[in-house]
Structure formats: structure tokens, C-alpha cells
Length: 298
Image 1 (tube, rainbow, N blue to C red):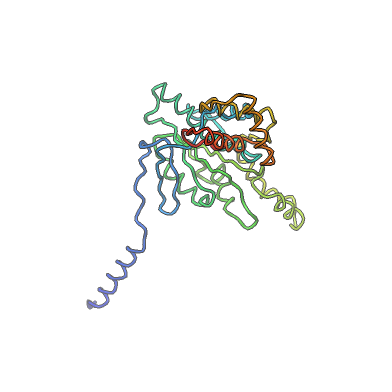
Image 2 (tube, rainbow, N blue to C red):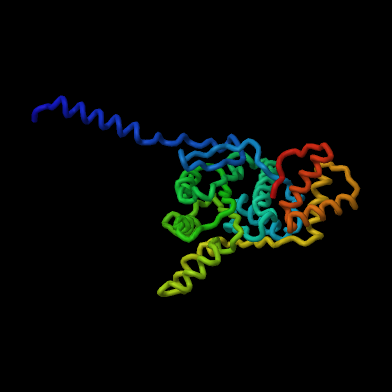
């Protein structure tokens, strides 16, 4: 066989071009550098979060039952015992995402106090809704790490033409490999079945077999063994939230005045929730010339 220098040169240039096009492999994640991370799908990496935006669980009022269940579930998982994926669903601004972050901090502190942080530390990994399709890649990176992970997706929901929910279904419980033993999945959503109601109704009315079509859509939420419902708070709960924030941040104001102003604030917002209580607290602190440590939004 004769040697063709031109052909060899062309092949070398093609190989070099392909190497430039191929993305470099992601650097191994260093999970010992932080307690929380954000998954970046663009380069398949975990970005450490130096300071997590969260508040103590004691400041989350009106959700005691849900808080207790999620805390117990997380503690069991941290100890290597069986635990369930959790879906926190319901009213906006009632502390769903705040509870996940608060529970992670509380259980992590308990592990540290028991001198078990090290290789068994509990990590929080946030994945954005639009990156759910890359969840299998993230789990592959977590599978062999010497830590336990809560993978958290805030405000999870799917629209009519969105098919990425099928990938999530397989990851949560199906598939050959299944969910890694060192990973638990927590999600928050305003929708109990993660799908808009009109989407489910449309499937029921237009499908050849309505029951099967609806089952395909709503069965995603069944992959979560723990369902925690969050409902609109009562006026007493709202006042308890406001008083808790005021005491925690040292806002010096007579109680009667605090309650009156908080009530007026909720009326201008047209509703009561933990988020409204926090927004009132920010306004009050600003008027009193006080600064608030961190950001306690629910």
C-alpha cells in the first residue's frame, strides 16, 4: 500500500478539529469543599455554594406537621436507613423550599455534632427545573461519591409538550440502575401532580384510552413516597410568622403596632403567606433602620 502524505495530513486535521469540538471531560467534583452545590448542566459540573440562603426551621410557622415528617425522613436517610423521595406541594410562599434547606441544615448540624460529618456528610445539590433532562448525568457523578446527597428541585412542574418528566420517572424509581442508594430527591411544586389541571383534563377528553393517558401523566407524582401538602395560612399563623421574624431580627416595635401594620400589609397584598410575612419584615426593618442577616425568603 502506498503512503499518501496529503491524505494523512487531512486525517490529522480532521482529528484535531474533532478534539477541539468535543467538550473536555468535567473535572471531578470536590464535595468536601462545601455543604451545598448547584448542578450546572452546561459543563456537567457542581458549583459549590459558600452560604446557603435559608432560615432556622423554628421560624417556619404553620407547617409543623410537614416539617416533622420531612425532618424524620431526612434523619433516616442520613443514617443510611430507608427513606422516601419527597414532594412538597401546595400554596405559594408557604415555606416549601425554605423547609428543605432548613431541614438539611439541621440534620447536617446533628451529624457534625455527632462527629460523623467527614465521609458521611449530608450534601444538598440543587438542580434547576430546565436541567431535569440531565439528572441522570448528575446522579452518575454522585453515585460513587463518599457522601449522602439530597438532590433538590424547586418549583418543579411540566407543561403540555414537555417530555422530560419521563426521564425523571425513570430516575426516581424505574430504570435498570435506579436511584443511587446515597441520593434522595426532594422537589417543591404548586401542583400536586406536577402537571397543569387543564393538561390532565385534555388528556382525559381526547385520548383513545383516557385512563391510560392520564395515568402516564399523573404517575410521576406517585414516584414520591412522601407527599407533604402546604395550604394557605390562617391569620393567626401569619401573625406568628411576623412576630417570629421580628423577635429573631431584634425589631423593636410594640406588639399591637406590629400586628396592626402586618394586617394592613397583608390586605394590600391580597393574601397571607410566609413570603408576605417576610416581605413585611423587610419593609419594617428598613423603616426602623435595621439590617437583616441573610435572606429569609420563603
